Length: 128
Image (cartoon, rainbow, N blue to C red; front, side, top):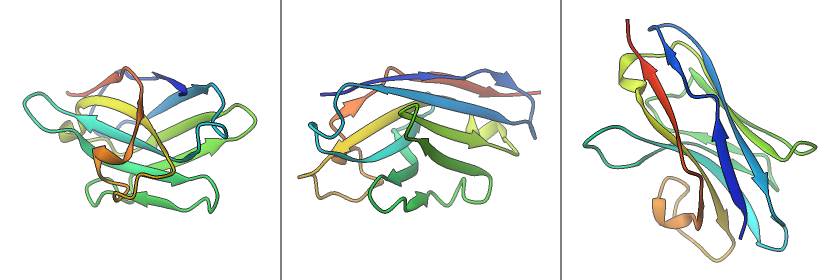
């Protein structure tokens, strides 16, 4: 198991930017972690995938709703996952969660079932 701690959530105006961080502790190699992602959940809605980062290939994937505005990245030295969010919209308002998936879970990157490690979430509010 690894521990994930998100930070960086805040209230911003539409068109603004935020960078979320997810600090990872624990032995990711021993845990077989090979994909890390960001999800979000708005009040009354299901948790939805935002972006994913595959550590071995460095491939990234995005939901259609954030592609071109958000960028996922990972700093190996700091063992931290980031989500740079630009051109924020009110519909981006949600609690954002960091997730890490181990080998053996064959679900698509966008599936909640793929991830066996979750952070506690950080609130992002976009409002004028």
